[in-house]
Picture 1 (cartoon, helix red, strand yellow):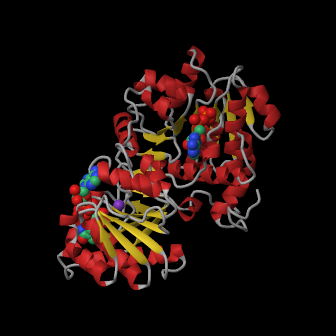
Picture 2 (cartoon, helix red, strand yellow; picture 1 turned 135 degrees about the vertical axis):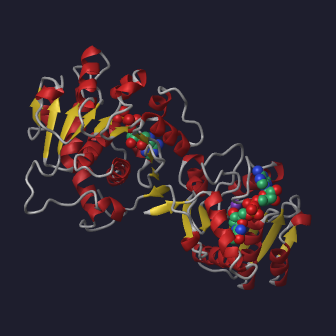
Picture 3 (cartoon, rainbow, N blue to C red; picture 1 turned 45 degrees about the vertical axis):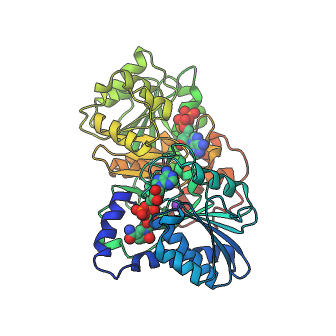
Length: 487
Ligand SMILES: NC(=O)C1=CN([C@@H]2O[C@H](COP(=O)(O)OP(=O)(O)OC[C@H]3O[C@@H](n4cnc5c(N)ncnc54)[C@H](O)[C@@H]3O)[C@@H](O)[C@H]2O)[C@@H](O)CC1
Ligand SMILES: Nc1ncnc2c1ncn2[C@@H]1O[C@H](COP(=O)(O)OP(=O)(O)O)[C@@H](O)[C@H]1O
Ligand SMILES: [K+]
């Protein structure tokens, strides 16, 4: 699990460490790590042209020291000081000693010929979008030929939320210190950060336990254990699906198929699209009646394509009245937003899976702080909220959050949410903690999308087909990597 630490959490750990180390040691660790990553990315230093944009704070100090390291290895480094009178004195002296050039915000910045641009304008001390001189230089860097590398955080990105209020530096890579900040992996900040590289500066033992995480394949593998010799179809967790309708039979087929393909123990279907489900998935046990007629299950999925009429409302109320985990998706979200008390006060886990428009139906738009928004709704409803997007966020009612690290924008196609709901139901049926289980489902869904998209555009049923291979890949038992899978 990768911990995501806020700027305040990182600063608190830095303060402890600063008091125990010689002055400048932490910045040296940061700058050396930064220069090392840059050298790896460039392949060589000698003869390369580097422009380091340096603000007046410690972020600028990091960029100046890293520039000095690169200059000492033969790079031609130009430091552009945003505020020449307040530049980090020791960093500036080091850069000059190493033979770097120095200019002001209007000077010859070399951005039109740079191989590498370091963005040390502002880091965790930043507030709001970039101010004009910095915004202009960030724009020139983005238009120029140089590989853009952000120091700690792309300038203009809120490190905690990923919000970008105005202009921000568009980085191909971000070299971040001590801990990954949430703003690098969620919201608009994710797009500005590019590939994130973490440099260890020794903060680990002093960091507060993070309240937000990213899961790795290894974490998710624990949710995808193969059956054991003593298992039978019931012991693997039975999923109940309430989905589809005469108008939307496909949602029932996709959701049921995804549950079966994730954990092929037993899936029961109850609803008005039974014929379609029978035809597509003879393995499912189908009833045309109410959820109560379906037989025993360990988790319910309710919502995809089920409609919002009185019968649908009745079926939803029925599953929410059980003491079982329930996934509330799609049409069920519309009904739950109208009657939140259906969800509030449930004893068993409830996982709501809104996209932004569905989220807004609960009263407040998502806004620019996606983790905060998911946490607030989760706390209000006493439920887990899985907020879909290019980096899906999961929040539990107690504030634990996860940001998904897998996926592809090819998933922006109809029906992929129905597949996610089926995956989630299958994983919840084993009784694992609901917030992490929801994050595991999003992770597996994203990996499946990456596999399916390796061949080009995907449709939702491609995901269902690729699920077994994705499960195998995440378990670590599949051969080959995502890149060479040729799926
Ligand atoms: N505290 C420490 O010991 C360490 C700090 N480190 C670095 O220090 C950074 C934090 O440094 P600071 O607290 O000095 O703050 P920053 O350097 O992040 O920001 C302060 C500077 O940014 C300017 N600024 C703020 N908002 C701006 C905006 N919207 N547009 C343009 N300029 C803006 C301020 O005027 C000020 O000059 C971290 O991100 C990291 O890079 C690292 O060197 C590791 C060690
Ligand atoms: N641009 C994107 N990048 C990555 N994933 C996306 C993107 N757009 C949508 N997705 C994912 O695709 C799924 C779409 O779900 P949803 O909107 O509920 O679709 P539907 O209701 O048609 O099934 C979600 O898991 C979401 O996270
Ligand atoms: K920066």
